[in-house]
Image (cartoon, rainbow, N blue to C red):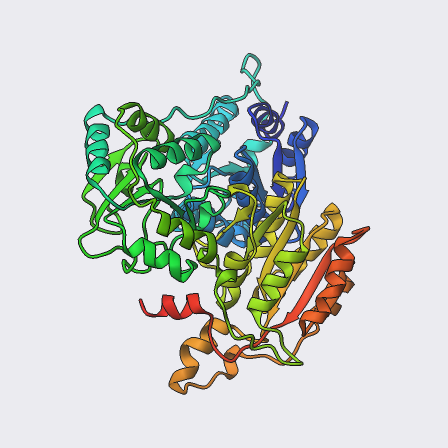
Length: 546
């Protein structure tokens, strides 16, 4: 058996059941071996899209997955998606064919390229050790929650595996949770008991049902309100004491309650400038605590009064077992009444700025929230528009929202939603894009159609890179480089086999309702011509920190 086949079979046996990529000569045999062993191959139209699909699939499913790319340009095409995954600590294995001959057109220093974007690297070096080296790379990805680029030199892939070498893999156990120290848990409990208005903010490290339940129970004990970072949105859906998302997307009431807290506890959450609005959501004199399984994350973005190294679920459970009487804390009747009526952005009155030619993005988003089925998964691209779908489109739980924004790259939203849709096949996938990101990634519309996904793609179309328009426009700078003539994105989508509708007014959403009612035989793209007179509220807030 050749090394390429042996590695592919062993990785599949070890739990990789989805492989995303674009196949070329260097990764042809490896990818086919994984398919033969039972893995599903998802062919993208561009390696950048494949990388983001794989990233989103891992985030939303919790299962391991691989990205398979050709040597040289296959890897460089995927680097933006790999960077996003690496910054997000997504446990993703990248299988990169590698040309080692100096005169090869495909030759680059792939290890240096991977390190430059924050990934870690490994290499298959001999026929004898190839399978174990590949399995070690997968273990590192899973146990350290890292994006690992495994380089597979072409000449090594073509070797025969020696007799007597084990070719088998087996499912890898989940990483063991990091146990907090008894002293740290005791300090945490004392801090909670001393607070009068605590708020918990759960992040990426808390995105499991077990962690959610432990945090909800601990919050009830100490009278804490519950918020999340954007990546964990939906975690506390249905809890009457949920603030939903903290940070730039937060509704005015949520920001007010955050600023009124005397204790903010980040659970698997970086408490970075976005989640804390450059620190403005932390009230004067408030104590800040962080719980994270990575000691280097503690205090990385702001000064903290206490840092606890430990798994979120395990730490919360131990704090709960420490006992103590339940108390009201921040859960007063006044706060309950306010949350019931003013916690959501759609509950905040606004002046509808729609015209006959352009629809207010708030009106669009509220209309879509009412029309689209509640069992959905929302993926969001980057840009001025992104706050509207993030704040106005409800999601059923933490697996209903996929937010690939660690690198803040435009153009990832469509691929994000494809990967998330494959992980949650029983939900309606909704991709929310700006016109810039939609046209940048339009090639993956073919992937949506080819996979038969019943997706809704919403394009918030202002014919511009809106963030730059609203950042530089007020100062009188020329905007010709960031504005564009009107493009019929609906026509582009029809060319890929979509149903499509152009929305200029709320009445045009009737076509969306008709699609939802069936038969949904093709995916739907909504080319929404949105108003563009000023920037979104979240962007104005973000620019205050620039």
